Structure formats: C-alpha cells, structure tokens
Image (cartoon, rainbow, N blue to C red; front, top):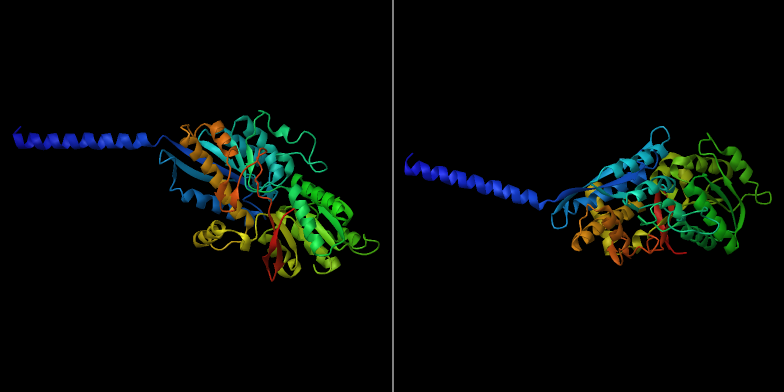
Length: 419
C-alpha cells in the first residue's frame, strides 16, 4: 500500500472513531425518557371542556422542546381517556385501568387528572401506593384532601392515602369554597329561595351540600335538596313539582349540582319548558356544567341567562401570564374561553417544575417519590393563574372563582368572586 492510500485510510478510520465517540457522548447525555399522562373524559359531552385541557397540557410540553433537566431527559405527554361511549361520561372501570397502567410503566412520573372527583376517589389510592404524583387541574370535591363537616364522608381524606404519604395536589379550589361563592352571588342577585338538584355523584352531591350549607348561613331558604336520575328521559314532572314547591309558587332559583354528562342539558330544557326562561326562575350551576355543550345541546335560547361558577379568575382579571396563555393557545389551537384550559396548563407546569427541582437538587426524576415530594413543595410559583402555592393538604392557595352567564349563545364573564 502506498503512503498516499495509507494516509487516506488512516484519516477515514480516525474520522469513523470520532463520529462513533460523538454518538456515544450524545446518547450518554440523554439519561432517559420521562412521560406524563392525563386521565380525562375524552369521550362524551365533557369533551368541549377536556379537549382544551389536553391541548393546554400539550402546549406546555411543546414549550420545553421535548426535554427537561438541561437536556438530560426527554419528556412526552399522552392524553388518556377515562370515559366510555356506553356511558358518555367517565367510566369507573376505565379510570381504574388507567391508574394501574400508569403504575406499571416506570417512565411515567406524573399523572394529571382526574377531571371528575368520583374518578379520583378510585385512582388515587392506586397511584398513592406507587408514590406516583397525581396533579389534578379540575377536582373540586374537598374530601380528597381535607375534611369538611356536613360535606365530606367519614374517613376522608385519609382513606385515599394507604401509604400514609400524600401524593395528590390540585390546581382547582374546592367546593367548600365554591358553595359560599355561589351563595354570595345569589345574595348579590337578591335571591331568597333556592331548590337544589344534585346528580348523586361525589362531585354533584358535594357541591350541592356545600351550597345548601352556605345558603342557610346566608339566610336563603333552601326549599329542598333532591337527587335526580341522570338517566331519565325527561324531567317535566320534577320541574312541575318544583314550580309549586315555594308555598305554592316557584323558587327564585334552581341550583343544578351536576356534571354535563349527567343529562344537565335536558334538566335545563325541561326547567325552561315548565317554568319559563331563566330570568323568571334563575338557573345556576357549578363548573361541572360550565361548558359549550350545555348551550349546544340545550339550545342557545333555552340556555340564555344561565349562571355558572368555576375555579379561577375571570379573563379580565388575569395577569400578563394568564392573558399570554390564552393568546398563545389561540395561535396554536384556536380561541377558547374554557376556564379549565389555563388550569391544565398550570397543572402541567407544576409537573415540569417538580421534575426540574428534583434534577436541580441532584436527584433523578425517574424517582417517583422524589417527584411527588417536589410537587408538594411548590411554593410561590409564578404560573399562568398568578402566584400560587400548594398548602400542606395539597390544595392550591388561590381561593378565586369566576362567575359567567350565557349571553347570546356564549358564556360571558360576569366577574371574579371569593368566599
């Protein structure tokens, strides 16, 4: 072999070694793949609420560029469905399957959900035993984190934490606050009597009880609190009964403590059919019916005047970060006013912060217990909702709720209220 060919061959071999070494260095830099999943009802009437939630979570992940901890780990997000077409809403079997599936995948370091408080009661103990952080953008039933006399059940919240260590935090303020907010709003509207209907689920019964309790304290007459059948074909007989329940006349308001998937639009349609529009007997509900599908299913004319409450701030009261979130969302996915979208964005931000904090402390974000502890330790976080912390129970420290009203086929912010 002549010297020229030998030199060329040597150069090629050297270059190959360099490329191989670079490839080894690059692969060594990425220590692992992390995954965050959400468990939300992505089938049925709740989709108008939950699709913007999943979009917001994905948008936050996209903003990381797909990596965390200075590029040491890749990160991805998967939206899981806990609803079935059969029920048209969240399904207990699917929620339990999602929780077990998450526990079995060691790459999953945070579980964002659930949307429905009843679903959380099922998955929380499963995730707790695996030290897997559960961050809910939407659960409002207080018993998941703290006891409230007259609202929560015996043994709550301890029975959801079989390990004895908390692993659950939430972005949504709870119904022991939302109940008084709804009642304060009623007082501001001069309402002196209310009939409460609840869908007999954990969330519906809980918010119904909270409104009942707060109304009595405020001096509003609670004519009755009654559970309704979510599977009924119509509620005309129920509404006829309610129309004469207030000393032979109608109450001044009906509070529907329910989720949209439990026939809320049909309840509204039959209320208007029997008692007239919502100016005559006000129709008020919580976050469970704060969704565009209430209007589309019931009809804009029927829904006109409905009032709803929801954790969070009215759009006009958000700071720069909150307004930027909605602007960025509109560019990526189109305009939305769904209030749980921004809360989902902050839920994902909390998960990412917990991971980054573990890395900054020299730990491994593949350690679920470490991520859980870091999530619980979040304080004075500058999020899209404002500056907030998680308290010792895992509840967010923002006690704000917005009130909106259906006007001309859309929800319009009425203002921000506190308990």
